[in-house]
Structures are given as structure tokens and as C-alpha cells.
Amino acid sequence: MKKEYKPVHGMWTSRWVFILAATGSAVGLGNIWRFPYITGEYGGGAFVVLYLLCIALMGIPIMVAEVMLGRRGGLSPIHTMSKLAEQSKVTRRWAGIGYLGALSGFLILSFYSAVASWALIYVWEAAQGVFQGITAVQSKAHYEDMLANPWLLLGSHTLFMVITMGVVALGVKQGLERAVRVLMPVLFALLVVLIGYASTTPGFAEGVGFLFAFDFSKLSGEAVIVALGQAFFTLSLGMGAIMAYGAYMPREIKDKSGRSRPVSIVSSVITIAVLDTLVALGAGLAMFPLLFTGGLEVGQGPGMMFVTLPLAFGQMPGGLLFGTLFFVLVVCAAWSSSISLGEPMAAWLVERGLGRGTAALAVGLAAWLLGVGSVLSFNVWKEHEFLVGTFFDNIEFLSTSVMLPLGGLLIAIFAGWVMKETHARKELAMKSFPLYLIWRALVRVVSPTAVIALFIYSLWSVLAADDGSAEAGADGDPVEQTAPADQETR
Image 1: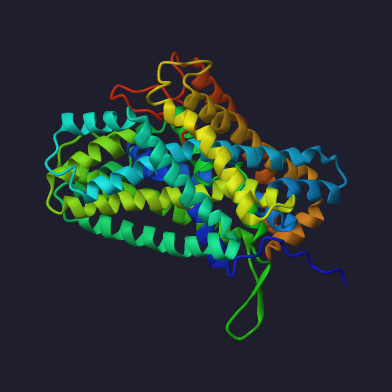
Image 2 (image 1 turned 135 degrees about the vertical axis):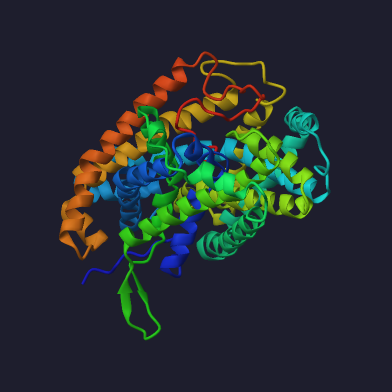
């Protein structure tokens, strides 16, 4: 009997650890500052139904494919795709999917750290009571002063990269698994506490209405594209993270009686999609009641998180405590996402012969250095624009509007058309053959068609904009993409 391959990097100890890790990768800044807003803007409960449909038709099928490829290969995305191409007896050029994913994750990590590190600054300042009694003008000025301070941003960017790659350096069990076992329960607990607090405010009913009131009149063609974009990007598809995490997913686990049970990819992915959606909606339930209570403007992007919400926390009882807890929540979401972005490239370097610590250090230093360009895009290099905007704009545009959709499309094509069907069926091990046929039809036809539509619309939206995809808005807010491809800041 052929000996079963075991990943060189280790394995998750249980199915639920994989679910927590993948959910941590999926839950990021976009869940907190974008999804709740677009839900309210595009019809509330009606948009949620549309979004869930997009998740079912595109997000879940491609995520199942990516996890399946990762688990079958058991290596970094680059070597996994090379191995699977050889097994399928096709050209090794298909390994380009792995290179594309790992590079996408690396590029996103560089600017994600630069933006996510703002939350570190705000945790400290919220705890110090900086926002207590602050006015709207002062809150906006405080945010702009932070962006204008390159040394402050460089310091926070450095700290965030250190804590991110520090986890990656410790490996799968000692680093990634330990981190998600702590970060995700803390994130869920903080979210419940904040929702409980929001439910005591006068604006809770209005916040719930904004999120869940069914308004089908707002479901336009644009709403469909926005829902497709959110469904694709929120699950961290195409950036190598899910394929890498899938490589550490066990095929079987033993129950308390000692009997082995298969670990289902499909049910695990569905659980991840549900948890990701619940966190995004929960963030809305935690934030919008506070905004409505204070009579404040509801908007998307960093402006809502770093200007409007501090103003709300500064004006209400308990704001110092709950404002601090909110930004700790943001840090947990960003941190859990960022470690998944650094893992694919680090895993590849380990397979090339580097030690885990050295590999993490190399990836972290390179991503940090590239991220310095993004940091300076908000101050020193703010006026220097080329192609679609600043340095930050171009890195974000290349990775999120071009590389990610292309990677997701190629994953669907490989899993649905290139990979041997016997291999796919064995890896998925679906008990229901009709369910397998539905997945296969979705991943071969429906999902690629949806990604192509998203890809074209995203490119058109960004390129048609006069000042680039991440131009500052009316409030001077960066990172507000005109394309629907605005994912985890990503």
C-alpha cells in the first residue's frame, strides 16, 4: 500500500482548528468597515440574501477547490501546484497558480500591515482616553495628523509586521495554531460584548433596521457585482492562504472512542463562510447603533472606523472601555488575517531549505520594506502619483484587482477541468454524488463566469476613475476603492 503523504510543515490538530484558522484569514478589516455599510446601502436583508447566493454559487465552490488542492498537495501553494500538475500529467506551468497566490499574499501583506497597524495606535490612544470629549473637527484632525506622521506609521507598521511574522516563525502548531486558538475566541467574545453594549443604546433599533430592513428596490446590477466582489474577497480566495492552510488539514481525525472519522472539506468551508458572514453582520450590529445614537454620519472605509467611531465612543458613557475593546477587536481581526498572508511564501522558503525562523524573517523584512512605500504614500510621497495613483494605490490595484481574481479563476479552471476527476472525488470524499455533481458544475462554469464578470468590472471601475482606485474621498479617507474589489483592506 502506498504510504500517505504527510505535510512537512505539520498539521492542524483538529477540524475546528482549521475552521478557526481559515475564518481568521477570512475575517479582516473589510468585514468591519465595509460589509456592514454595503449591506445597509444595497437593501439590507435583501442584499444579505443576494450575498449569500453569491457565496453559495462562487465563494464556496472556489474555496472548496482551493482547500482540496492544498490538502492533496500538502505543500506550499507553489510546490503543491507543481506536484498536482505532475499528477495530472499536464505542463508544470500550472505551478504558476501557486506563484501567483503566494506573490499576491506577499504584496497584500506589505500594505495590509501599513493600514492595519493604525489600529495598534488607536488601541493605545483609546485606552489613554484621547478620544474622550473629542469633537468632530478634532477627530478628523487627529486622524489626518496620524497619517501625516511617517515616523509614527513606520513604527506601528514595524510592530505589526514583527507580531505577524513572529507567529509564522513558530510554525504551524506552535505558531499559527496557538495564535488562532487565542485570537479567534477573543474576537468572538469581544464582538458579543460590543453587540451587548450597542443593544443598550437608543440607536440600536435604527441600526438593526439599517442592516436588515428588506429593500429589494436597491438590488441593482451594481449590487450584484458588489455582492460578488465581497463574496470572493472576504473568503481570502486566490492569495495562497487558503491553499496553504488546506495543506495542513488532516484527512481523518479520531473521536473520543478512538475511531477515525473523515474530515469533510465541504462542511468545513460552509462553516467558515457562515462564521465570516456572522462576524461581518455582528460588526454592523456593534457599530451602527453607536453612530445612530450619536446622530453621526454612516459611511464606509477608514473614515468610519478612525474618525466617526472614536467620536461616538468619546461622547457616550463607557466609551473609554468599549472604544478600547473595539480597537482590540480590529487588531485581532487584522492579525489573524495577516499571518495567513505571510505563511505561503514562508512555507515555500522552508521547502527550499531555509529554517522556519529564517524564512519568516526574510518574508517579513521584504514585506516590511515594500510596506514602507505604502506608509509614505499617506504623507511624504502623497503627491507622487503614477499609473493608477500613489505607490499604495498601485500595489493594491495590482494585487486585489488583477492578481487575486486571476488566481481564483485559474484555481477553478484547474480543479474543474484539468485535475483528474478521480483525484478530486477521492479528496473531497462527498457521500452524496449529486452534491458532487453540483459542485463540479459550479466550479467549472458558474464560478469562473462570475469571477470573469467581477474581473472585468473591477478593472473597468478602477481604470475609469479619474484619480485612481484608492483616491482620498470627500473626508480625505484613503483605502476606499471605487471598484467593488475592496476586500479586507485588502
